[in-house]
Image (cartoon, rainbow, N blue to C red):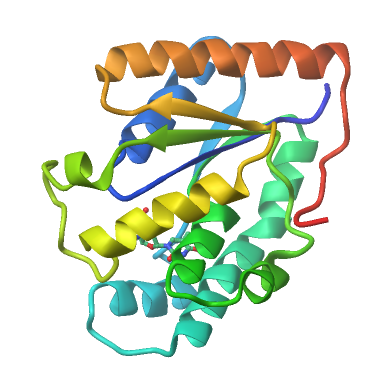
Amino acid sequence: MGRGLLIVFEGCDRSGKTTQSTRLVQALNDAGVRARLVKFPDRTTAIGAMIDAYLRQKTQLSDQAVHLLFSANRWEAMAQMRADLESGTTLVVDRYTFSGVAFSAAKRMDLKWCKAPDVGLAAPDRVFFLDIHPDDAAKRAGYGDEIYEKREMQIEVRVKFFSLMDKSWSIVDALRDPDEIHRQIMALTNRALERHNADPTPIGKLWT
Ligand code: NYM
């Protein structure tokens, strides 16, 4: 049994990441591929509770402190994630280090500083970027409740995401019908699984 793949969903707020990552896990499990959903921030831990209070504007934190909490929230999950990957479970991750870097860098924080605490996290095999213009996202339900859900910020975040892309990313048009998006993501995932089975590679490390 080879290792599982680390598949990451990224995008601006309300781009459909949670819907699509949940559907992908379900479809993989239905097809007999062992897969588990991971979500960041994980608001269920003690660190996650601090992040949640900040996002819902119940507490204030400096930009640096909250950035480090987001990173710590990934590090506290890393041992289990690595164990799952090694034992053959594919992980589908709803936001990861790229959200960490893009949101903080959008606040004009130094890019190198933003990446540093995440150096050494497991590197994704594929990243699906659900692309939607913030003006279209703003029309979707639930938008505007949390601290970063403001037009100017989201536009800047999207620019930062584009600057972080490499060949492991696929840009997915998130304005389309959800079924169509799911089919595209499933096809891309199957291709990644086939490629990995034919030529397995060890889990990579971020940002190296
Ligand atoms: N966010 C998320 C960050 O600023 N840094 C991070 O490292 C992560 C993982 O949290 N606006 C931001 C992006 C979102 C917010 O995410 C909450 P979600 O997926 O809506 O729970």
